[in-house]
Length: 309
Image 1: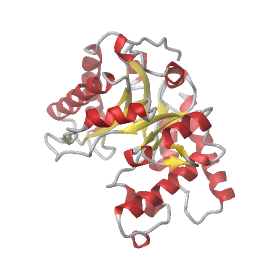
Image 2 (image 1 turned 45 degrees about the horizontal axis):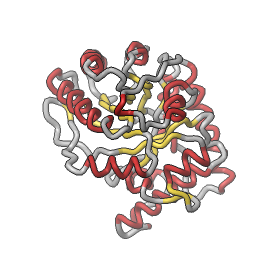
Image 3 (image 1 turned 30 degrees about the horizontal axis):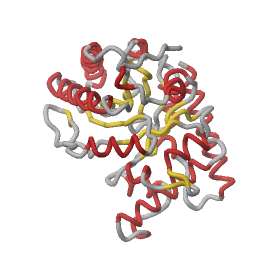
Image 4 (image 1 turned 120 degrees about the vertical axis):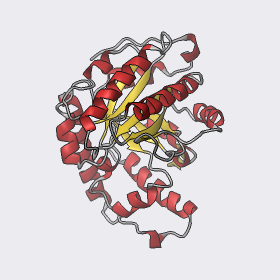
């Protein structure tokens, strides 16, 4: 799929080379954005237990070392990894003495994104909207100065409840407009719980709501959509053709990498944006050669699945 890039006057600050890459280049988006709540589990899977750090700063330092190891790997290049989503703590750190976002683009050809949400509110109407973000404008200003291209925010849909789904999507688009005003491209992520008994029905309602809200965006505005791999192949295919959509990416959502890749390969115009499935099989005690071999195989497999649809 090739898509012309249209920008409103408010978006003239966007890096057009990065926009072209995110719109049309083959490959996938790496999600390296585990936050405070998910970091202990991610470190545990990497082979670093909670007994190996005593406070949040030590924990985030260990997590940054893991992410830096991934970013430095020879296979982590823009020919297959076209973008990467960072956690705020990562944006504020450096890789080989270079600010993380600059390292990604300048040394790896990977477009940098930033996770901006502060977690999920309590479940209501079978869904979880985002917690309030009163300091979002300040964060977006910092992100722009750090050469971040876009943002990501995750809500969760647990069942096919029209009211809950509409609340999730409406909030995501309201915040997306705030992000667009700063010259950043928002990734809208209304995740559907893969364990929902009525998952396909929830996806039907989600698709309906997304279409309505996309049509209401201003001319020239573009967003990305990060969606759970659907039960019905090509369920979201039409969204990729919408003039307000820069790209549709898929989250693994708890599926194994093998199953996530298999499902992804059956969906046209959808590329991966995997987190846990990307780091599956990587451990802290591996030699650099073994770490790079496994990561290289993973990147090849996810890139191939992203190109198969």
